[in-house]
Length: 197
Image 1 (tube, rainbow, N blue to C red):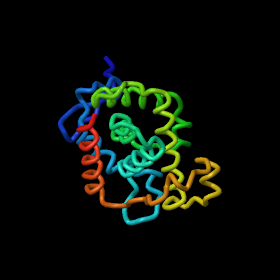
Image 2 (image 1 turned 45 degrees about the vertical axis):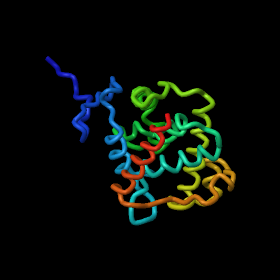
Image 3 (image 1 turned 90 degrees about the vertical axis):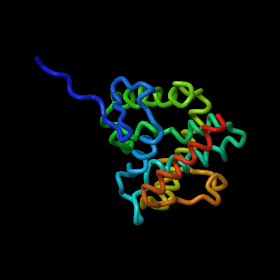
């Protein structure tokens, strides 16, 4: 008799997260913060002493989202902070790899996103306008990362991520720090937002 391949991952919290059928009760912010702090964006192909983590990227996206939607409530800012949360278990695949993997990656990401959202009091599926604004913030962040630490020229970044408004990036920088510092910053930002939701 053939056995099913293992589809769950044990988390440091002790939870077992079923990747094919995730439930909100198996999701902990500590696991998300830890995982994202150790997952490198750009497949680690960035300048600097430390990898640029998905947790650091998420903090930047939440900040940019607040500039795009100045009156955004804590609920939607939390959604921006958690926009890449599934990557704590599935990793950060660059867009060309996602395209090669196909629709299955998107389905896995959507199931994990829904469970994460429900766990933290967000709608399983975000309103279309909020999702678009978070995606816009994500593209601004990607443009900044591409030009400041990933070796892209501005012309290349404009081609792949669109020309970005300078005022959305004014005073912002790409932060490279040890994973445990990033984990602490991500957790602190989550705590601040969830206390307002």
